[in-house]
Every structure is written in structure tokens, then in C-alpha cells.
Image 1 (cartoon, rainbow, N blue to C red):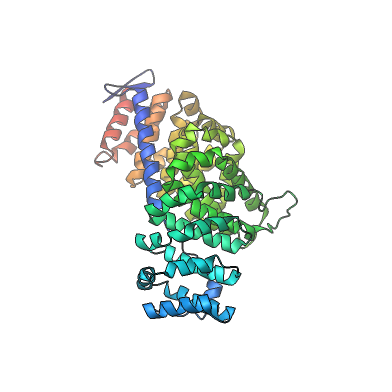
Image 2 (image 1 turned 60 degrees about the horizontal axis):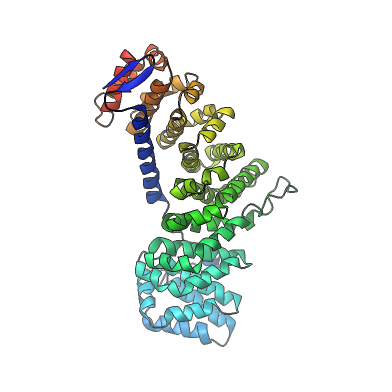
Length: 467
């Protein structure tokens, strides 16, 4: 299969450039698959305190007559409290799929709800928005499409002053975008991309003036921005033709600045609510950055240039350390961003080396198999850049680390370890010999019978023996 001479690999049918091309295609497909799988979920926003105050009633299925009566009271009740109570009862009923279907079949029901949404009474507006939010969470696209008359108003309210109301509108829009192509087609000309870009631009200034002390006093103000991230994630997935617009309007730069602020906040505070806020805010920010970086538009308009700052990597590693100790479930999100930063950027790979971040990265290999695969993928991104980069990886801690990962039974971890070894053998003279001296051949032999790994195992064995 493979033959080696003077420390370099040659293949009978696969040159260096072809090898690199195949790897890039495989990684691009992987990034797309991950985005398809994980970044299109709906979110349900309910105020637990409000639910408890309302008695935590069991959801009751409402019939046509009851829905019509609640809408009548909400529209024409003699007192504001009576109108608000009617909407609360309707909202509870709309938590059930059967009530949702009945509601959208009733003529004028959505029109009445939109009228209440646009009224000049704040409490009625909020309850009407909550009703729409319950509808947006439906798994039926027909229910989402019934909400079309409300989308222009939800977008308008993103420029309002109530953080709670903005948050509710963002979550609702995010849910609607996920569910229906018709909704997506309508939101584009209505200006959802500029509206979200405007929300993004609010982010970095929300909570990080230099005068702040150890307590990050403005964390609550960050909630709508976190919701913007929740909305922006499915938006970036579905509204692909507009990603270039977001990038040209500075989305990557602003998200990068926000990442710096979040890292600084994590270092400054021991606030008990920090973990929750990080889950609500950091995760959407990281996902948005990851998604933008996977798009062709990012390369076309020079997206990576907007983030070409060593501080971004430093901030990301601060957050990775925080995740490791406080929220390990978020580690894959941070590592996926690191993968997307280093995939096509020699400058980020250089920064990873110059900032001495390879060793901290290796320490994450013991966390889980999922984390191990992502760490090894990032190391492959670095090694793939050529001999100068491989010199900084090998041998150091990497050789014993790879021997450890090859001892595992997880085929994904082993497969990515083999990928990294293949690149090292290709670019680093003496790597194959050093691997042999550390019982590397025996490590490979453990996986000779695994169908998914056989080809790579045999290729590496030949290279190690004859290179």
C-alpha cells in the first residue's frame, strides 16, 4: 500500500495533495453532519416562578367554545386583570398539541392574538407573546405556519426596551425558523438577518466595562443576547444565503469580542449563577461562531481574518478550563469551535503552538471518548499544515499519549489516532522509527481485525517497518 523512503511517505495511487484533499473533504462532511444533527433543536421558555404562582395546574385540553370564550374575554373584558387571566388560561391550554390544532382551525384566532400582541397594554402583550411561544414549540409545521402573521411584529419588538419581552420574541422566532420553510421564506424579506445582526452588536457592551469589580453586576442583561444566540443558531443553519451578510456586518468580530468578555468574566467572578449563565450565553455564542466558520461565506468574505487574534484562542482555553471543572458537558462545544478555527487556518495553528496550548489540549484526552476525538481532530488540523508544525508536536507528550489512545477500544478514538500518526509519519522524519521503539507495532496489532480500521492499520504498519 504505502512505501516510504528518507522519512517521507509515497503511495502507489495517492499523493500528498490527494491525501490532504480527502481529509479536508471528510472533515467538511463531518462538520456539516454535526450541524445538521445538533443545532436545530427547539427551546421552550417558561417562567417557573410564574408557573408556580399560577398553581402549577395540569394542562387541560380546550375545545372550540372555550378557546372562543377566552379570546372574547381577552379582547373585550371589562378589566385588564380579567383580560390577562383569560390569556393565561388560553396559554395553559396551548401547551397541549390538541388545543393547538383546534386553535389554528378557528377562524380569526391568530388575528385576535396578533391584535393583543400589538396592543398598548404591556401585560396583555406579554401574555399574547407567551401564547405564540407555546404555538411555536409545536412539532407540527402547520402550527408554525399559522403564526406567520405575527413574525413581522416579533421582529419589530427585538428593538424594544424590555429584556424579558425581547428574549421571548427571540426564542419564538428561533422555534418558528426550525419548523417551517414558509416561515423562513417570509422572515428573509422582513429583515431577520439585519435584526439579529443588530442584537449581536449589543453583546460585547452589555456587561464588561473596565470599571466592573469582581462581581459581574450586569449578568441579567446578557439574557436577551443569549436568546439571540439561541435564535441565531437555527437561523444560521437555515438562512444560509444570508450568512455572508451577517459576516460582512461584523458578526464574527462581535462574537469574538463577546467571547473575550465572557472569558474575562469567568476569571473575575465566583458568582453562583455563573454556571447557568454560561450554559445560556456561552454555549450559543460558541455555537454561532462554529456555525459561521463552517460556511463557505466565511471564506469568501474573509471571515477568518475577522477573528485572527491570539486573544480569541486564549479566551477559548479559559472557557475550556471553566467547562472542564464546572460544566464538562460543554467541552465538546468549545472543542468544536477550536476545530473549526484551526481547520483551514495556519495562523490559528501557529498561535496554538506559540501560546503553548498543545499540552493543555492533551490533558483533555482523559475526559471522555467524545472529547478525545475532538482533541485528536484539532491535532490533525495542526499536523496537516506540514513539517514545520509537526516538529512542534513530536515527540514530546504526543508519543506516549498516542500509545495510550491506541490502547482504547473506541474505534473513533483509535481511528483519529491513526489519522494523526499517518500525518506525523508523512511530515516528521524519524517519527515512524520512534514509534517502533516504543512498542508502537504491538499497539497497532490490537486493531488489525477491526473492519473500520484495517486499511489504516496495515498502511501504518508498512510505513513503520519499511519507512
